[in-house]
Every structure is written in C-alpha cells, then in structure tokens.
Image (tube, rainbow, N blue to C red; front, side, top):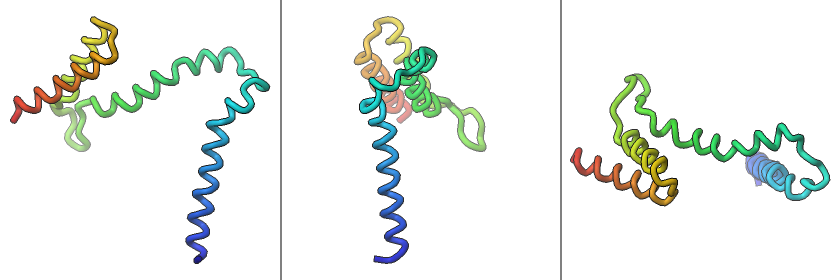
Length: 109
C-alpha cells in the first residue's frame, strides 16, 4: 500500500468518525447536556431551512452568464405551492408539481 492510499483511507476513516460523532452526539449525550431554549427554538426551523436551501436554487429561473430565463420548473413549483396552500396535502404537492412539470415539457415538445 502506498502513502497515497494510506492518506485516502485515513481521510475516509476520520471523516466517518466525525460524521458519526456529530450525528450520534445528541442521541448519546442529549439527556446529559441540555440545550438552551434559544437553540431549541432555532432547531425547529432546520428542516424548513434545509428544504428551502435545496429546492429554491433549482426553481429560480437564472442561468449563469445569461441572467433570468423561463423555466418550466418554476411554473410547476408555483402550481405545487398553490395546491399546498389550498389543501395542505404533501402528497398532492408532489402529484401536482410532477404532473405540471411533465405536462409543460410535453407541451413544449
């Protein structure tokens, strides 16, 4: 095994250890180290913030170097949001969004 292989395997091992410790820390030590109320309130917004960070950049109709451009994903996303606001059904959001996206792409040919 070369020095490069040892370096790569060592890096993978250390990153795995860091990931396991940070993710399992709350399960292992959560009862012994209470979180302040401010942190608890902030953690309530973490799932919504993560979904927003993943979805919004994909929906924004902005092409690098070209500026704003029309994109079917934005229209499908707006329709899905309107379906959610009307029904509060997560399944219907997925169905409306995907059907709208597929329909708009089919119409564009």
